[in-house]
Image (tube, rainbow, N blue to C red):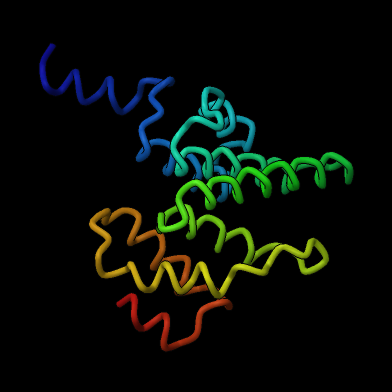
Length: 162
């Protein structure tokens, strides 16, 4: 197999669950370019034994499904499952910047009545403290983009990401 064919098969294989593909699918689902269900299908094999990052992305699928649900019971059920899974991912790897960033995203956007905003300052501190050591340029760009427009980050904090 030529290098080009191998590259194309890696890029378009529907069962490829590499982190870069999952991250891209998450951002597509968050922007409603693909459905939350389509994103969730990519994470079917993720379970409690999976890495904290993959567990966090699976939790994000549940949160996105809650966002898109019409039935209030389904919304709350899906959100609460996603929240519990996300907390498990953070507990599994508390120093993981990507996991903390995903929780920061949820908590800084969750409606106040859900009562899920207690870790914004802690997550932001982890993100900012580990920012300069991050080697994943795609993740750095995603964090920078989100934080630039976030009301949960001060002007000085946003400047730190420049």
